[in-house]
Length: 175
Image (cartoon, rainbow, N blue to C red; front, side):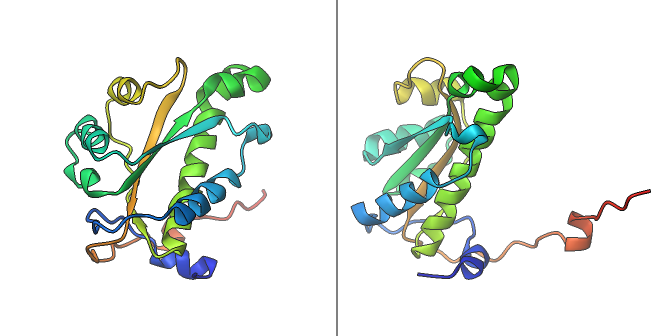
């Protein structure tokens, strides 16, 4: 188990996975981390679909504009916003924004939890929403936000450069 900053440094998008399974305990730890993610009004306006069936995962890859690497992952988590859950408290802003934020923060927590366990993942945001929804038989109103294929890494991709902090962040100074 890595400490938080080591985990953040170690995390990178991996697109090749070993055939070794993700254990039930590892998956539970990842889902528990996602469950601890902050959310607007603590509503947790999202749901997670766990996909382990290889044929379904291949179909997910097709729905993600043929990102075939997804099909090699032993498990894919599909994070879905639940706009109605957030709208009940926050109205249109909860529906259009807060539920999406809730789902994305949960995805980030899950991705970091996978990295802390020595697993790898790759955040996938390019897909055909209606195809994912139909394939997974999502209830009306749920909106797919991100897919997270997770597995044991079968590659060590080169580290991608990051923006310099002085280009990324600036301090607001009062007048």
